Image 1 (cartoon, helix red, strand yellow):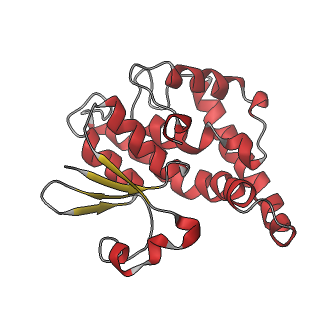
Image 2 (tube, helix red, strand yellow; image 1 turned 180 degrees about the vertical axis):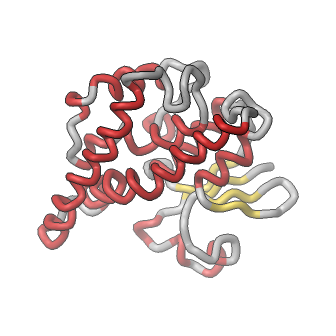
Length: 202
C-alpha cells in the first residue's frame, strides 16, 4: 500500500493528506515526530536524505518528497490539475509563491508559536515574520477578491497548497478577519466534498 510519512499538524503534510482524501486514495499514514528528531534517523534518511516530511513511498517502492511535487503526482489527470497549459502554469506560479513568499513567514511564525511555544529567544524572529506574512496574504486577498479560487473558477492543488498554512495562519499571529476574500475562500474549500481537517487525525 501507498505509505505517507508525515506529521499531520504540519501544513505541508496536511495538504498531501487533504488531496489523498479528496481523491479517495487509500494509504497508510506513518507519523514522524519531527520534534524528537525522527526525520533525521538513518532509517528515514534512507528514504529522504533531506530529512523532511512529507515523504511518500509508492506501491512499487519509489519515493517522492516535497509536498507540492507530491500534489502534482497525485493530481495528474484529475480535476485538481488543469490540462490547459496556461492554467497549469498558473497552478505552478501559486505553488512557487507558497514556498517562497508565504511559507517562510506564515509557516515559520506558526512553528515558533505552536511547536516551540514562542520562547523569548525566538520572539524577535517571530515578530520579524509578520510583515512578510501579511504581504503574502494581501497578494492572495487581491486575487480571491476577483475569482473564487486562486486559478479562476476551479478548485485546484494551488488552493490546496495555500490552504495548508493559511487556514491555520492565526496560530502564527495573523488575524484573518482583515481578509474577507480569504475568509470566504477558506469556507469554500472547507465545504468541498471529502474535505478533511487536521483535527480529525489528532
